[in-house]
Length: 269
Image 1 (cartoon, one colour):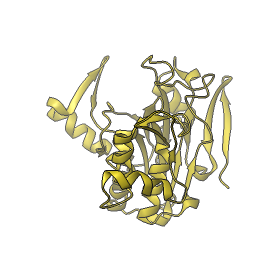
Image 2 (cartoon, rainbow, N blue to C red; image 1 turned 45 degrees about the horizontal axis):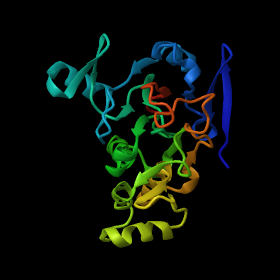
Image 3 (tube, rainbow, N blue to C red; image 1 turned 30 degrees about the vertical axis):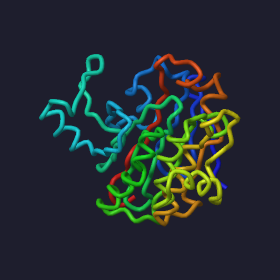
Image 4 (cartoon, rainbow, N blue to C red; image 1 turned 45 degrees about the vertical axis):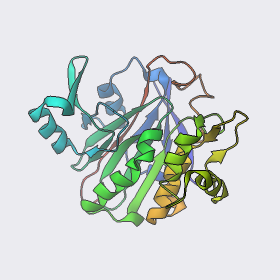
C-alpha cells in the first residue's frame, strides 16, 4: 500500500507520496499561498530550475524546450500572467536533470509522474475537461516517446475534489465515460460506467445529475493503457472537504490555487 506523508517547512504543511520516494516532489497546501514557486522549488531541490504554464483545461503537454519555442513565436500560444509570459498547456515534462515542473489546482487533479529508470518526470493539471481529452495518457505517451517504459512509471494524484461531493451533469459524465467505454450510446454509457470495477460514478438525487470521481477516471484510463494499479496512488484528501489545508474552487470561488511539483533526475537514475 502506498503511503502519503505530511511534511513541515517553517511549520507549513505539504504532502509527499511513497510511490515517488526517489524523486524530490511535493503537493503543497494553501498555507504556501504567500510563497513563490522559486521558494517551493528550493524546498524540493536547491539547484532546480522552475517551469510552469498558463493552464487552459486542454490536453497539450510540453517540455521546457518547447515552452521556449512557443515563447519565441508569441501569438495565441502564450499569455501574460502578471509580469510573466507563459505558454498555454496543461502538462509539463522535465526531460533534463534538475527541472522542477509544476501544476496548479483547486479541485482539479494535480498528477505527478516519475520514471524510476530514466528520471523523466511530468506534472499534469487534469480537471474534467482535460481528463475527457485524456491528458494523463497523452503525457504518458510523450514520456514513452522519450524512452519511458510503462512499467517504470509511478503516478501520484494529489488532493482533488472527491467523487462523493463532485456533482456534474450527465453530459459531463458521458464525456468522461466515453474515454473508457467505446461505442456506447449516451443512454447506456452511464449504466456501463456504473458497472465497471472501481466505478468512478456515484448517484445523485437531482434529476439529470450524477457525482463522479475524476481521479478514478484517470486511474482507469491508465489501467487500460496497461499500467498496473500498484503504480498509481490517489491522495486520501478531498480539496472540497478539507478547507483547513486546500483551496476549493467549488467551495469558495476565490481564484486561488495550490501548487504541486516534481524535480527530474536525468538519465541514469
